[in-house]
Image (tube, rainbow, N blue to C red; front, side):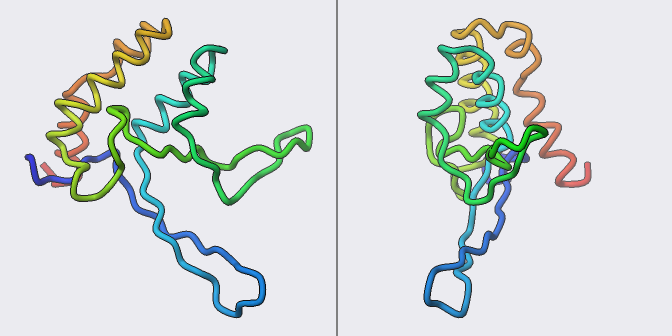
Length: 135
């Protein structure tokens, strides 16, 4: 399992258009669904929002909400819940189970999100890995 990619990890390619160029630049965007979910939950409180902004990087695409206010289309995080890099070789099921999920729970508990913290378990990493492997 240590070499199996974490089910929360995904890689997307985003196109950036630069002035005075004909060809858009294609940039890989590494994402962690667990970290993005954690940031979304932390953002519900004022103290948590201060931490969430430190973990978030700007998204290049933006959308308008129902009142016409510009909001980020997606949450982009710079780090996993364990505050380590989101990178394919390091984002393994073992890391999710032993580091990311416990860190996710601890951060949510620290900011009073006991219910949400209780819903996360190392088993969820294993379930995602099982789904990816077809077991």
